[in-house]
Length: 371
Ligand code: ATP
Ligand code: MN
Ligand code: MN
Image (tube, rainbow, N blue to C red; front, side, top):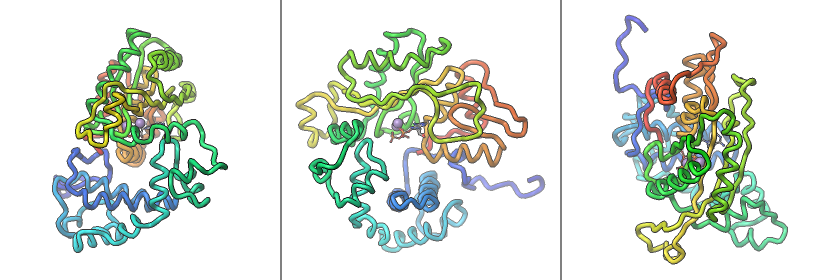
């Protein structure tokens, strides 16, 4: 406000989209503990506490230095009593007893194990746990358990898809997608998004946005791409979701996590992928290939900026970007559009594609890499 003392430069915003965050995390000892607590609350469906610990982890990740005493956290937002108590334990004893208790809990360990399978969410994991199942062999030998196709694939490629994807592997997949798309249409554009776009060295999958200036082609292009990957013999799994995007229904007032663009969740076979430190990779080195998770999303070109912004992540960054738009700008943001509630207008980002993305960026003050 006017006349008051200027805000000190050290102030940390409560919004992740206003915090410059590097890929270096000086406070891993705390954020690892918070993530265990968040997972534990997620398994118990206590959403508020789960979000509180994820938010706290995100705040600490943005700090350039390690927190050495509780006094260092005095001016930080989003740290509640419970969070501070956990930090105090860690500062005093080098570890949190609450977190250790969770880590040694059988239910937590089992749910963590089951949800590490592609296609198994907390609900299914809980159901299996309640039936007394504790290991993968329990599941796979239980006659009454029906696994859907996604879960079957998840078990089949478990080792490969639980191992992190490197930047080099992401690049190799980029070339494969690029080649496949341009064999079908020459004027399509491909952009790497997700964690790799934020500068991460490793990811759990590789995310791409494909878009084309040809009107409505984005609705039919994806099945063509999938066919081609299949013909190349590298398609191990495909969950295709057709577009439900309807321009006449915009702007949407129901802002949800999932968007309406055509997309697919794939598992691809990546040839010649040798990983350093090959000790645990003996089998893969023999085979000469690995399975990798890949996501493709195809927005219409005039929605490209919103899709890119929405798919770059992180989850916390996206959550706070929407909250910032709503609370600080009286606007609604999702992966499709930005809507100005005061003017009752969709903010249109006309012009060239590059300008559209930078427009979305400058609107929200800064676009730091947020992990
Ligand atoms: P990782 O390295 O673990 O893959 P990531 O940040 O890339 O990290 P993803 O799960 O691949 O994580 O998600 C990337 C971004 O895409 C996130 O911001 C997420 O919100 C968004 N996203 C993922 N799935 C969907 C979906 N079905 N609809 C809309 N947005 C999605
Ligand atoms: Mn990703
Ligand atoms: Mn993804």
